[in-house]
Image (cartoon, rainbow, N blue to C red; front, side):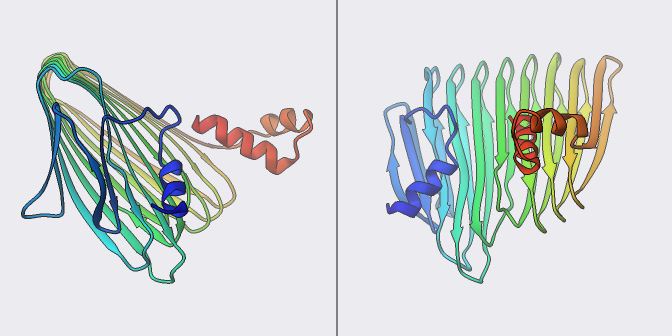
Length: 301
């Protein structure tokens, strides 16, 4: 790997990054580096571009890193990654895509991730996207939680993504929970769309979605959520956005209770940077731009 590769990996790594037990780095559509162990195996798909990850039952805390980096202009990279998590396992997965494209031809990454999570598992999935130059991302995440599971999902779109269309689909089993924290910032003429479809299928299943976003300049964002309660369950969706300049955010909530004991809540708020916040920070010595940056960073933290 060269300096550009290392810088991209740094930008899409989690702030609390832990050295992985298992590693699969994909660069420009090819496997660059791979490391497996006796508990976790990675196999290339035979019919599609991508990998199958197999985690043995009762695997104790394990860390996987499966980033994608693109440094070629005009590359359209589509990858299908399936995660098969054995019962009673505890896994942390770092993913995401970093693009460095100084070419005039756009680079595109389409990542389709499917999680088949066994009974009694605990999974944390962290996904970051970052782009320098011209690049689009289209991540799709499908989650199937068996009984007595807990999954936390953190997605971050840092900056520079020209177009993003993120889709998340989840089916949640008995006594299982899904927590999603999403952070997005768009600028210039960028566009980002996120679309959640969650089926609370199991008894005492739950989901909590928190989306925080900032749209500045002439950028546009669209947030769509559809939570279906098909059993005794609990669902809570929060969409909080800040707009600046001519930024535009549209939130489209849908909650569908199909069971008498389905408890579903949706909250959405869109506003501008408050003037009193700016004044307070400027009295501390920051100029207006520095104060705005401080407010935005705090909002997305």
